[in-house]
Length: 589
Image (cartoon, rainbow, N blue to C red; front, top):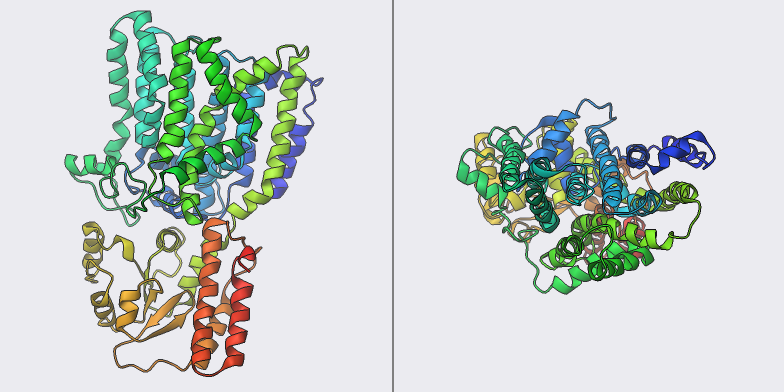
């Protein structure tokens, strides 16, 4: 995070007083887009800070297909901007995403205006959501949700009566945006109520041919999916070589079309819906969110700026993209699970900008200095960004990337490591493929073993792997006569072979081999941890992947303490527990 650049940007924005000539820019959608772009680019992290984040950073550097549904439009966007002068591949992909974040803010401002809000009201509304922690995070790191915001915002801008296009052109543009939206992120379909209303309006303006134009636009917008048929390379999630495989990828059949992951946790609907509503409310500072939700109801009963049906369609889109979608999630919204689901809360938060702008319009109806109100929006944006920086620094902690780097660097030459977690899997691929770190290490992702394409890829490289990560996996790996390390969560492997803690993994030994004494294991790990890069603020317990990395560090020393205690070395066990306490997330103590 470039705090010096960000400080200069904030200082420049603060100097935009209502009496100065640039104040006329404040009414313009592009002005807020440029302000947001500068902030997002300044805070774009240099490190990968999440699992999907690492995957997209790798694909941005090397190309290839992402995990289902493939997200071809976003990958192509990252490839098109891969020339940007980022300090790392992750930073370059973050800068490319910041462009989308700025565009999302600009389009959202224009949409608020098209739905009847005056410039000052649109500016205040957009300023709040553009500076929300969720927007700051996902508009500045390689994640697909900024692109989703741009395309959803375009639907909101094109569909209303005061939108920029009419007739056939309106229908064609809405169809094109819908297709591009589906090629970016499938949740864009949840804005369909507004989009369909816009196409119906286009048909009333120019006749049935508008529907045909929309279908043609939709087909053109879906063209990026053709990229998956030629996408290949070491960073790709398998290969797509047939129409049936393409359809399966688009429909996410590997996970279950309507599931967020392949690891279903029952009974999470209410918890996820509540988490979604809480995230939206916090993003809007609570009161504006309540006012925006109330304004949707008011405008449906007493329409202004748009028709009753348009406001009803917008309300339906907010509900579908918000609590209805969240209720489908099969992950408990806590810890890493909350990080995974919160990304999806950004879309309904952005959609709420239009009714919040309408509420602001009512509140500012008697304000005689609209330019001053718009300038106040800029000041509010700056203040909210400054207030959100400490939390953003925790989200963008280098802890995750350094944890994966520590793992790779700790392994002996030619080692094989089997990992479970997505941050180890995709973070390791990023470091090895995009940054050239430890290419001699074979990093196997146990969760991908059940995919035929994954095992086939390793077989071509001379490593035949079983479908289940149990004892058979250990036998195959140890038969290579290479050093083997496995995640401590792979209990089936560890139960079948002798092993001992080695950093955040366990060293696997052949059957009958002698395990080093507990004191020697402690000494090995002390030497390892002395070489680990831990020079950053210790994360808190709710800091996602950064917290998970430190829990793994602490778990290593807890396991060592148990061995020392079993060996009768109580003083050594106490020392190991002290190390564990010093490494665990701050609030876990």
